[in-house]
Amino acid sequence: MKVAIELFGTIRHVDSRYSRTGVTAADLLPGAKVADALATLGLDTVAVQLALVTVNGQRATLDTPLHEGDVVRLISSVSGG
Image (cartoon, rainbow, N blue to C red; front, side, top):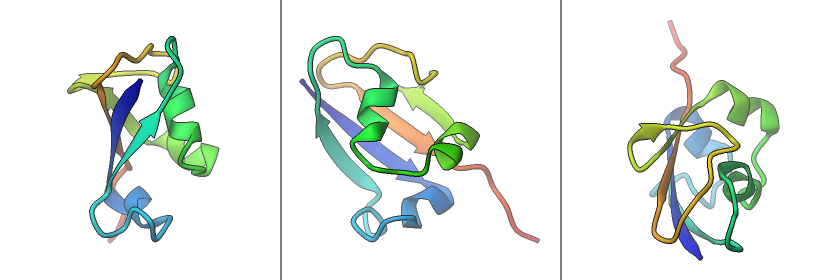
């Protein structure tokens, strides 16, 4: 199944593959969870744990099951001064 993954904030710039658009897709096996989708990105697990995760606009956890066509958004916490 295919799901879209959108990255927002500083987490978007962790890897140059995502820095321009912040959007990618993942092909996953049926029964996959958010953690499986994010694992395809190779992001640092600490960064993922500190971020807000949503699926189709609803807050989600790494254990949230995914379905064909879902949109996973990973929004990093804001920092600065």
